[in-house]
Image (cartoon, rainbow, N blue to C red; front, top):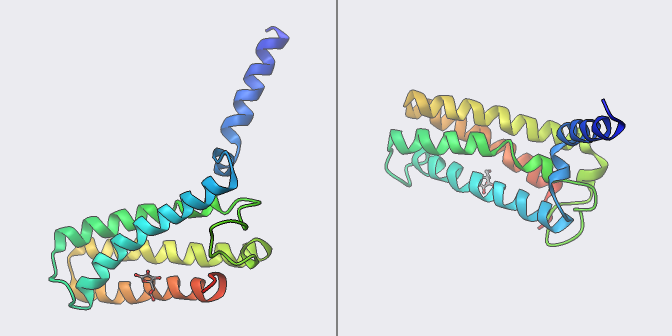
Length: 150
Ligand code: ASC
């Protein structure tokens, strides 16, 4: 193999093993990305929460679909809390970057509850959905109280 070829293969391997963080061209893109993901997640979660609280009629199919979207999208914001994206159009507190283990713990907790919510919604049992909505909402609030500016 030529040196050139070896170099290209090495570069390609490095590129695919880079963390998702590397996908953002600039800090503003990372901020926009995580806000967008959190917004889409919140919209879908709220739709299910409204059914759980009786503010909206219970539609099991819509609940299951919305919860599945929220569950999937709950995986996305975290790769966008990149170095340098603590400054800009963001309500993220700088503590996120200083307490990354605790922040990750909160993020993981929320994702775990989203999995349960999605399972509950799939089952079509409104009581299970209510329990899961409360648990999931609690994880949103815990993290916001600690890491989101007013
Ligand atoms: C939402 C939303 C949150 C959570 C939280 C639950 O719909 O935007 O931040 O639920 O309010 O306590």
